Image (cartoon, rainbow, N blue to C red; front, side):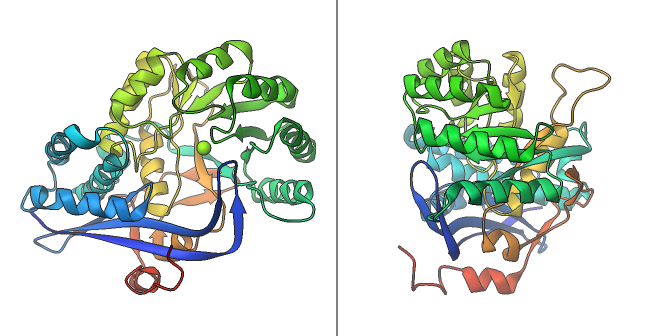
Length: 383
Ligand SMILES: [Mg+2]
């Protein structure tokens, strides 16, 4: 059970079709994965969300304090990493390194005990989940509205029951595109909007009031993550539920969000906010404040699988005999790292995701693809 090696990998891939959102454009994908290997050769995989090279440095910083520890003592290791980073990085990228290691330890724990992570988290309370399609990013095309509508119809055809689209191009354009997408997909598909904190409170309110009539299930990151009061004021002025939290770290960050009554839906990213260990604590905290939890998920099938097991274990809040299936994010944008590097055991059929019963996270790595995209081998387009 002793940890012998911790090896971070930074992978990158150039995209065929660059896309953008309210803040900047993506023309490459870059991620940091970590493999933790035990003395007997058993290994687990984790992933960090955020600037990959910095996460790799964080993992390397923690490594000497973890080598030789028992992989089953993930909370003890988590505490060690927390205390080792508390003075310098109790929020931000250091916690993504903590998260990557923590997720790998959960994967390992599952393999050691021959149980899926969802069972080890306490049990599968939600065996089926409704993944929602994250897409509808912007591209530099002649007819962006047509591109968005066509993409939304494709998700509907694939069976998705919910779709999240980007906003943040300005109130008029956003309203036009939201209207076009809602009219195209009809009323039986949930539609969410995500501004990636593009707006001031007043702008976000104007947009919210204009699109309320299109039955928006939530408005994500309407204002700056620093603007806790703006979040709260917006919540009180619109009927659209307000979501946020992908920029918050640890339970302490979420307490700040909840104390300010800033959101209806908390969106911790398991691979940034402190791993599965801390995400479970955040879910308990959210329950105390009567907030919903829908994790932010980006990256490869390692991150997605971690979210699946986490959502499978989430309490129904409140409980009742008949409740909707919980939702979780499924990024549908182009990502060769997600699709080629990581094998997974998740099945999605007719818009319903079945929680896998394979040990650990239920993932493995295609070593050939790992080497192909490793930054050690791909130098020519790395910025
Ligand atoms: Mg978002």
